[in-house]
Length: 250
Image: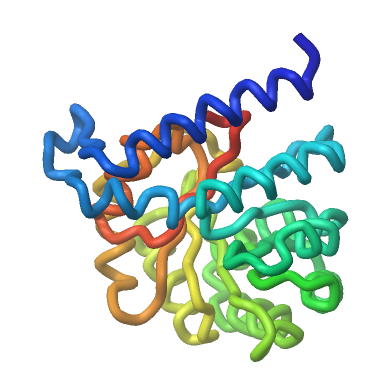
């Protein structure tokens, strides 16, 4: 089976699962039956349908935009090259277009991230993800970390939602807390807790602690190894607002 056919098959299966779970409890063995109808009904509306595969073609983006419209997903998250195209395909809908800059780990120069954010907004991005500089976080240089994030955010002011991405792999609880505090100080709209670089599943206790820290002040998105509707629903039940996932990952 070629790549396009495989993506189409997986997309259909995933959307069918999410649609079916939208009106039924989606509890898992890890969380018992506490994940009920309210969470289930919110799963589709919390999904950020993500395709960052370097081999993605324009027809893959067209397909994901069509699926996002049909299923009522919150957004599509695409590489910068596809932002203007996705924006056009989603015109007249409530589905947002999101993109990421400064990958991986926020280690691009501040001026480069600034330029990427500026270009993304110009091309119609509604939401921009900016990774926190993990080198600065590990070094404990929080002032420089804050300056870097604030400067990169400038072109998005009053134009796009900003999500500060924190890679959780190998990050201590104290540094995770510090990173969240800096994101809040910079007035980011979301903290994104990511397992993209480190791999492995999210620790639900860790997710719960993050949502507690963010409650009432900044929203939370989770990405990486969220493999089915039950996992997404469990995270939503803990206070996660958005779920970033791809058909290939599922």
